[in-house]
Image (tube, rainbow, N blue to C red; front, side, top):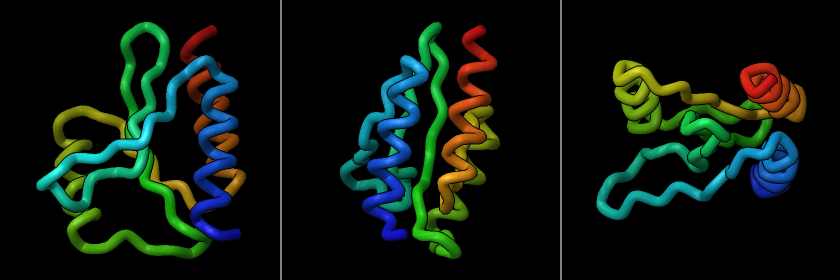
Length: 95
């Protein structure tokens, strides 16, 4: 599955939780995750999408570590199974 198709599937499934999976672009700051997930109740998560088996670039690894150190959840998503797992986590948080 191509990363573009995986991202479309991700957005559709996460939106069904009532969350907003917005494209995250940070001019002048390379390596940021692809999506910022705005979850009802003021919660925020981030997601970096990769084609199946794809690896994070070194700058992305650094950025993920930085975000996690700040207390944010950052998902690295490379399969439909991971999408479903994240969506279920969000749904459990909301119930």
